[in-house]
Length: 216
Ligand SMILES: Nc1ncnc2c1ncn2[C@@H]1O[C@H](COP(=O)(O)OP(=O)(O)OP(=O)(O)O)[C@@H](O)[C@H]1O
Ligand SMILES: [Mg+2]
Image 1 (cartoon, protein in one colour):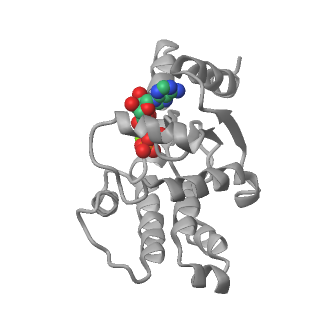
Image 2 (cartoon, rainbow, N blue to C red):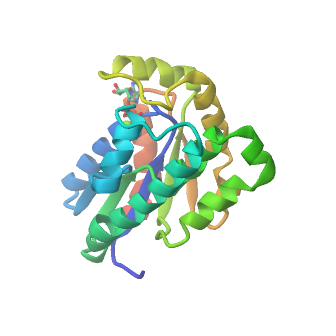
């Protein structure tokens, strides 16, 4: 799809600060009078709603084939999210800031897949194939945070942890995110250090995104 907008994806482990940084950057763009839309995955649509219930442990999808089921649902949610929100906004010329995208699917579902499955099949490649109709982002920013730092931040947030918020998994995810260029070799990817203060990370994000979004 050719469009006048920009699709910018922000990724990171749980507690990396993606939601906070997206909100801050959107405000920065609004002050520059840019049309900006914030969205996230799982989406607000019907499949995304079910996924959020599964992540919160309110819906049980069972143990057998759990990662495969999640990968299929996330891929379905993504196509619905693209069709109903992201693509129309991009056609209108908006800057769309998306909190997680298919790199999350590849990382989280691969990191939780059964060991015997990973021995038999190239699970990462399968998840990529499921997402082959998903529009590629114009840019993906990965906020890399030390797992212990992210864990401390998660503790400050209200609400119970989701099914993926345990330290062994978060450490695996952090290393998969560092490997993003291998996982998505055709995508444009930038890494940011997310350990410093909110203001420092925001400044680094603006330094990366402003030339791309504002052309300066
Ligand atoms: N650089 C930072 N320094 C200190 N605190 C931070 C920083 N970034 C985020 N936080 C705080 O950490 C908590 C988690 O941040 P946030 O919700 O943005 O993370 P997230 O990456 O969106 O998490 P999730 O992936 O689970 O949605 C919030 O309370 C936020 O204010
Ligand atoms: Mg978040």
